[in-house]
Every structure is written in structure tokens, then in C-alpha cells.
Length: 127
Image (cartoon, rainbow, N blue to C red; front, side, top):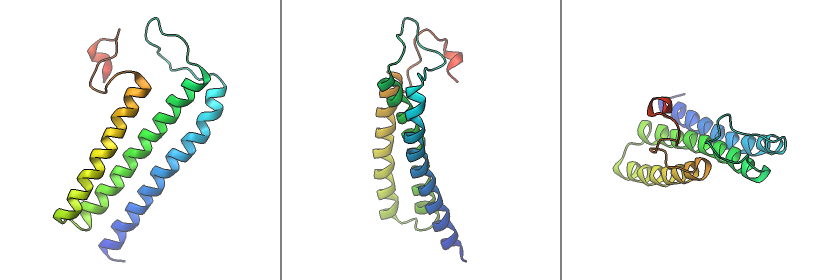
């Protein structure tokens, strides 16, 4: 097995892991939401989450993690196997789209952009 085949296998494994995280997250989120999942720290004055909202947040988190794994797989395959200008350009477009999706999901889950600090928490507690 040569280097290119090993990298392709690792990339496929990362793809499988990313898709698996999303599918398992969607399935596991259902009973968690039905049991009344609530985040550990709700913002001051915030109401408890409904089952629908809890499921959306749990599902969004699993999608975010899955997207990160898929981006890692694309980076591994593109940079390690075929680092041409065309493949790097395609990777850049894929990463931009997935980054936009990640930011959109983060905004949907938390109600704020990733670079905004949470209301009522000091900046040091954000790390």
C-alpha cells in the first residue's frame, strides 16, 4: 500500500466518521429532546427550551461536528494527495461553504455569532 492509498483510506474514514456523527447525532438527539434536555447554563432570563428547540440545538451541534470532520477529510485528501491549484481552489470553495454553514448553525444554536461573547459572562469564561 503506497502513501496515496493510505491517505485516500484515511480521507474516506474521516468522511465516514463525519456522516456517522451526523446520523447518530440525529438519532440520539430525539430521546434527549423528548426527555427535556436543557443546556447547563441558560442565559439570564431565558425560558426553558421546548422539545422542538432542544432537538434543533442538539441536531445542530451534531451537524457542526460532522461538518468539521468532513472538512478535515477534504483537507487531508487535497493537500496530501493532489496539491494542484485546481484541487486547492475546489477545497477553498468547499471550506468556505462549510464555514458559512457552521457559522449559520452556530447562530441558530446559540443566538449569537461565534466571535460574540455570551451575554452575562465575562470574556475570560469564554475559553
